[in-house]
Length: 312
Image (tube, rainbow, N blue to C red; front, side):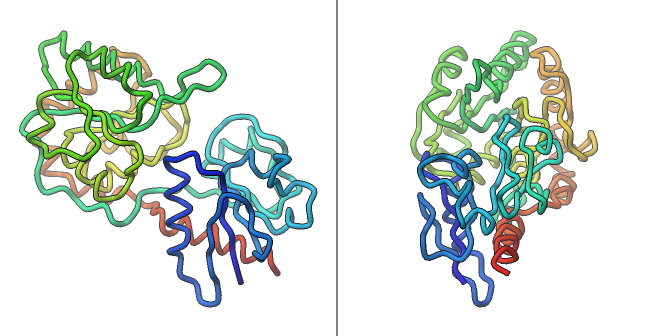
């Protein structure tokens, strides 16, 4: 049986999924990833929601539709997905924006198991932010400016914390507002990073590179407007890092993910509190990893098994 996850190559996360899908090992199943749906597949997994119904390569209204799993990764309005075989949601709230098929599975993606619990921390208290500046209908949905404004507030209060960004060219403007910064395509050691802000190459989302990033910060800041938990939140916890997040619909207790309003003042207050607690949170780092109950490898396999069910 051939299962075909597909989406066009626009870089970043979905390309990781296509690669990692091919590592799913189920007896009698071959997983082949591609940019367009493969004609010789038995079932398909459409990774980018709007490509399921697009004129070129779409499954809507074709004989392949009932054997296609459509993934939903955002909270934007989508065309009805009722004629597809199954839909994979990452959060219950997506039911409101993506009318779904009869067969629906809701499952958070989580972190990759390759992330390891950190065994050291940077000499300088350093906050980090991961992602790209995504603009949708005029809104900067990841809200990087809230992170920048919070850092300015913290520094104005006398705490000269280090700052690291892990993203792409879209973050340059935010880096420039925080005075001096470095641009690096390879990950630096923690000693190289403590002096300022670092932009890293967006093409490398390997566990090894991200592990180095998380090991070089003291806390991760999450500002996206999505009510779900983004992957960096799970990744940071898997490395034993505390997370400060704007409010979202998640089940983590406040001592694991400190939630606050999406204002610079509220985020800055949480950063200052984490600075005071930095030694204690490092000693208790194992509790952050233990809070992770969703793992990406399980999510990938669940998608493949859902597609297998459609073959019948």
